[in-house]
Structures are given as C-alpha cells and as structure tokens.
Picture (cartoon, rainbow, N blue to C red):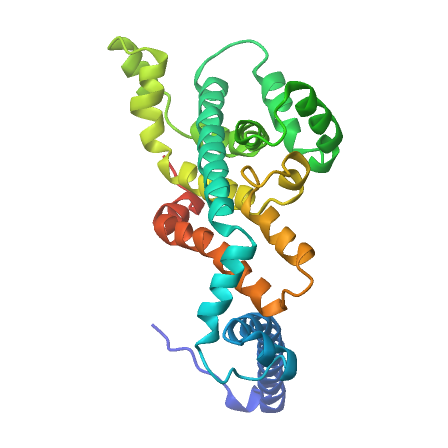
Length: 296
C-alpha cells in the first residue's frame, strides 16, 4: 500500500485564512443577531416580572424598567386582580370549557379517525374532507350564524352552549392528526382481534387507544390552551359573570376599571397563564413523545 503524500507548496494558505476569517465573521454576526433577538424576547418578560412587584404609586412615578423597591406589593396586586377580574369563577369556567371541550373533541376525533382508517366503507374520502373543511375557513365567519342560532336555542350565556361550541370547533384538527397516526398502525392487530371475537368498539378501546395516548395528550394540550386563551367567542356568546371565561374577565378588568393600573392587569395576566404552564409541565413527556415520528 502506498501512502498518500501532500504537497504543502500547492496549498493556498491565503485562501484558507480568508475562508477561516469569513467563517469567524459569520459566527460573530449570527451570535449578534441571536443576542439581539434574545434580548427582544426577554425584555417583555423582564417588564412583566418587575411590574407585578410594584405598587400603584411606585409604578406611576418611577421608570417602567426600574427594579422594584420591595417584593411586598405583589400580594396586594394579586388580591386586587383576583377580586376585580372575578378570576375565581373565570378560572373555573375556563377550566370546565378546556377540559370538557378538549377531551370530548379529541375522543370524538379518535372515533372518527378509527372509522376513517380501520373500517372500509364507501365515501371515506368525502367524509374526511367534510370534517377537515372545518380548518379551512376562518373561525370568525362563524360568529354571526352561531350567535343567531344560539339565541334561538337559548344557549347564549350558558356553560352548556360554550362546551358544545368548543367541542365542535376543536374536532377537525385532531381528526387530521389522529387519522394520519392511526393509518400507520398495523392492520394485523385488528384482524387478530376480530378473529378472537372482539367488537369494533373493543378493538378501538383496547388496541387503538393505548397506542395513541401520546398524540392524544399532545392534541389535548394544544386544544386546551386554545380554549383557555379564547376571547372572541367567549365575548360574543357570554356576557353573564357566571358563564364568563377567564380571558373575558381580563378584558372586563382592563376596560371597565379606569383606575386599574397596568401592574395589576399584568399580575392578572400572569395568574391566568399559570394553569396552561402547569398542564404543559404535567404532560411534557407525552407532548414530546407525540411530536416524534414513530415507525411501526
């Protein structure tokens, strides 16, 4: 075997040095851009973090980005935000809408996806496109007919009406995801179960659902977060305090109280974001597994 030899004299060291300098300059530019973006992303959170620890007088007199002089005002801000925004009833309503609406929508979507992928019948493509069409049109176009229909049915200002709406509007996207996921599950499992005498619902409950927990948990987190943060439909369909969602209550807090300072509003906003963060922390393992591509 002959060893490969290099002629050092043939190498262009100036070109190598220029490429090295160019790569170093690109890294510096990328680091600078990343640092600026990070600073722009962190600044609002810094503003939020220091504002909730300021009293109304301190917030009005000092610089908005100045550090607070004490941590004690946060308790007063929390109490004021909780009382004025009626956050207790708002959180319970949003939790009810998010859990019931999200869970019911995903279960119905799982049933529909099972039928579209595991049962042979005519018109499967038509039914899938009919369900999927719910994600094509902007949701705002449903406001007027939905409001008129709810008025005729007496479902405005009711928890039942809100749960029915959130369940219906959250079905199409989970159907798309679960249909693609279930299509990758081997059909041999279904056939073996049918030979053993299992019904279709037993196959769905005992075989398909246990293999879909990860994407279903991911979808539940996504749909719960959307329902929790929804304002426009809650504002149109409910105006009574007992059925008002949390985001609707925050809007009332900001609009109805002229003497409410921004630090109290931001304290209420921070409190409103905690349940979604806690839910993500509880479901983070299933969330990450649901984002992985699994080959079966």
